[in-house]
Every structure is written in structure tokens, then in C-alpha cells.
Amino acid sequence: MTLWVGVGALLVVAAATAARAGAAPQPVPLAEAGRHALATAVVAGVGTTVTSALGLGHGYWLVVAVATVLAVSRNETAGQATARVVGTVVGVVLAVLATALVPTAVVLAGAGVLGVLALAWTAVRETRWMAGASSAAIVLVGSSGLVGRASGVALKRLLLTVAGAGLAALLAALLWRVESAGPDRRQTWT
Image (cartoon, rainbow, N blue to C red; front, top):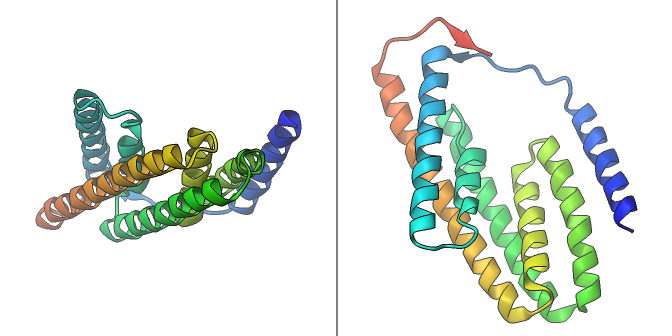
């Protein structure tokens, strides 16, 4: 079964990637790209330090949320943050319900399917669907079919994702203020 899930995952990711292969990269002013990279690195470092200091298991979820949500454009960051939070909320709620209502073997098989779908949606940059499928898969596997564990994993996933998305949105707003105050740069990074 594992072999077929792996083969299926590769086929889905390949098809999804091929469907999106024609999207041309958008040039970004070099100074803007540099500020974005520096800000992402600083927030990821601080997030890792804080979650480690607090002893939060899975603290990397905050860093992943920041890295996947933060975009060079403020508007794109807001859209990504909303999609990430909505997808995560839907995914964790459905996973907790599934853990409570569906036999463990079916739950774990469903987690495999959701993992493959999350990979495919990641390849085509469908944040809401990816966040929902990956969050549900993580909660289903992390709970091992136990409702109490599912609730704990779901809550931690939700809180760290919301915190990461919020940090990314705040950082995008701060970067936008810096960029709107500075002169226009003609060099671009593609």
C-alpha cells in the first residue's frame, strides 16, 4: 500500500506541477527582495527561539506558517494569511470530527490520501486547500485515532498557524511602510 501511495503522490505532484509550469516569475525590486529575505530570516529565527524556549512541541509550525504566508507583496501576504488560517481551521475541525466518528484504520488511510492531496495543492500554490489537507492529515496521524489527542494536536496546530500568519501579516505591513517611504529601485530580482 505504501508503494502505491508514494507512486500516486509522485504522479499527482508531477501533473500539478506540469499544469502550473507556464507561470512566469514576476520581477521584484532587488531592495524589496532583500528586505523580504532578511525579515523572513529574522522572524523565523525569533519564532524558533521563542517556541523552543517555551518548550512548545511542533513550534516549527509557526515558522512554516510565516515562511509560506509572507510574500513580497502586502496584498498577497494578506490573501495567503487568510487562506492559510481558513484552511487550517477547516482541516483541524474536520480531523477532530473524523477521529471521533470514524474507525482508526479509516482515519489513518484518509490521512495518507490527504497527505498526497496536500502535496498536489502545494505544487499548484492552492494555500487554502493545502493548509486544510495537511492540517487534517497531521491531526489524524498525530492523534493515532484518539479524540483527546486529536483535540490537543489540532489546537496546537491552529494556534501556531494563526500566530505565524499574524506575524507574517504584521511583518508585511511593516515592510510596506518601509517600501512606500523609500525611492523606487530599478534593479529587480527574478
